Amino acid sequence: MSLDFGLIFLHGFTGNLCEYWPYVNGLKKVIWCVSIAIPGKELGGVKQWNIHSLSSVKFANYVVWLANHLGLKKIILWGHSFGSMISCIISVLHPLRILGLF
Image 1 (tube, rainbow, N blue to C red):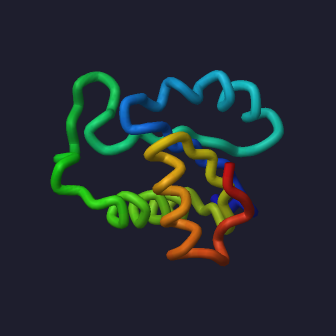
Image 2: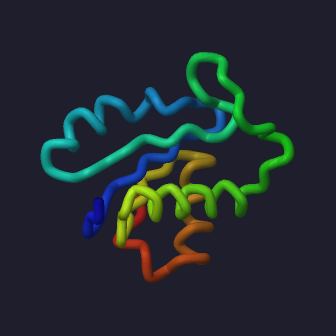
């Protein structure tokens, strides 16, 4: 699957990906979107990452890897708190991939 663009939501450090579900559900009819959990903040108690050993740049690169895996050519990032910092890092490391920051 290859999409022209998609919207990626990144929550704050004390939050979780559920915070953006109302937005994802409302917007999914007009734009492809996904809410990504910060490593160590996954739902269901499944901890696949050690959040203390993961740098902000590594997480930013993971988000870009995921966008590539999903076939997104360009991305719009919507971040809150820690998620906005990750969005800014992504925009510096991969400026040609970014359509917008919120």
